[in-house]
Length: 333
Image (cartoon, rainbow, N blue to C red; front, side, top):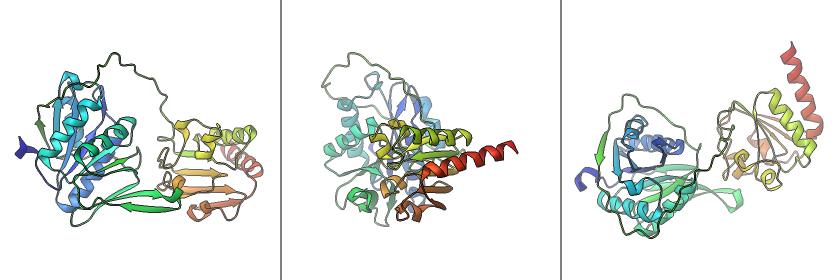
């Protein structure tokens, strides 16, 4: 079994799945790992843990995985850190991967540091980029110093190198002709630390930001209910979605699912209209792949203008109604 999974500098991705459906962020991480592996002649392995989840394996192979390490047991049907972390540690000790990637989800943020602690290695959270060097060092890029600069973190001595990445940072890819294999592994479960009494599934409304071709977002500069109604109307006439920056969430104008940036959503709309948003690094990493960025801000020195395709310097309360009327007029003609 050790020979089936061993590969010192290979890249592993923990696949988070629910009821046999893999999370989007896991597929995105497999695509990124595939790109890095192809560059350096490595293999990509997907860690699939659960109960009756074998049917997920073909999806992971088509997403770019060379190997699917399948660990099934009824006790693994629901996520439990007291089972999952030791199981992954056992795999790491046998396979000795160069790096292991986790989605920066509630589960990933709990599991990745737990595995890192057991493996006595480092863990970098919420990376916005991952690259490899010729000697196998993982360059883990994160915003630092309040978003004023980017920092590259490395784990120079310990292995594996562990990182978490948020949904939308990388793009999913499909390789329908890609061949892979499924390796069945019998998990060695430890003594349970607690009993799972009940599992309650929370119903959450999915964010419209990921699929919207047009996104209108507001920041600290939009400080009234009337202002947000203007933004909502503009988003409506453009058939787009409404979002915002961290100050907009802190001030209660948007929900958490609408926040854009490093601690929110990473999106790729065709058109992004930023209103009253200063444009610091922590926000701009969430829209860096937008095709066209339009900034509306009364402060001509706002950093967002240097990251925009078009900039309008002025009071949004005057600018937005003009834009709304122009779109309506275009639609009537």
